[in-house]
Image 1 (cartoon, rainbow, N blue to C red):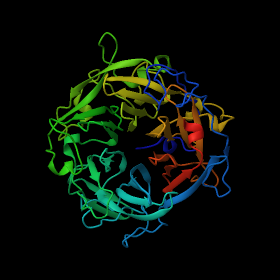
Image 2: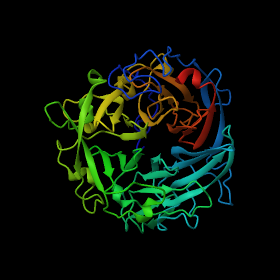
Image 3: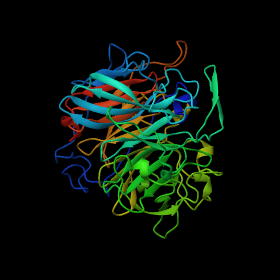
Image 4: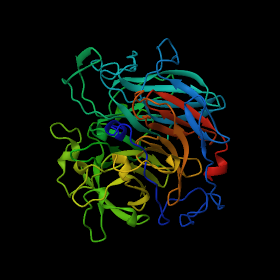
Length: 497
């Protein structure tokens, strides 16, 4: 997630209301893509989630009829095999398996040098032995109600594991949001060292403790500040986001030269195999739109044609990948974040763009965008838009109805019913949101863990890693600081379809 708005504007609040309109949208369950925005996936009127009720334990406000349990908590829950306590800074997460006994998840830890509760270097999982005890992934097994059964290290020796993506074959591709090179010094927390290997890669993590992990970078996908990704169902293409500024990041597509990806492909895939390309969104006359911020709520539901341009040096040996293109030859975006596939295409999130340095000339400030990229048509459509609210920068009065004003969408997942769940990385109030592409957005949870100073305005960490169990019974989501993984249960089917 890089530096969040909360870190920039400590104490300000969630402010923007999501807007969406009908148009060329992905199919939601059995509902035609042209369905009215007031109907759900079964064709009946959508039911708004009930108001959020404060939690007497001060963890999570939820609607009536919903409950949560803590699955893991940094520094408190025990990991298996004597591996210590749960690491911190929970981030991108995916459910990679379901059995009668419960669910298997893989959890990212977005930790860098100097972080407390880092991922320990467990033999067989270590990528860079010169890296600090920081980022990595843990594998979490729960019972059918989300209660913790076991947790253990899946990969270590990586840096700032941000988001990633579940593969069609049941593994997790974890992304480093860090691009330090071998030989770079690091320090923090009273420790220091030198990286022995380059960073800024994607890695495959296996969910079974009996599998030998393969902490080998997938260099073919490029070296940059990765955020998230989605694997196309045909398993020949991967779509990847970049969270970066100065200049703003890009959205990428990797295409296999032949064959298709499968479990363990990282071991065989050549460093320069396939093609890595950057996205170009085009106007009807073919003009490349230089930044997504030029597209506003007026264009909701309108498909734009997408073309792709090859990345000259995917390993960024001397120049970062996003800087290898002149402005106007690619479409940039501030904070390309969550990516999640629904089979027909993938949803892509831009969290916000409001600072002058992050906006091209005459572009509009916004507090969040959700896009849908159609694999077959190669078009991209803005499906949800959060207009800029001045209060997000401390410019105006606080919103009266905090659970109806949202900003800073980040991680995204597709529910079993085809709707979306978004995790907010905004300011002040922090929510988990239910969002209907082309329809309304509702708050379904609010973080109540206050991490601000006792004499200052309340501060609440972002939510991360929303992911549903395949049977639709459990929504797993994380509070990033302190790292808390939560399992939320309730009558989801009454509100999400």
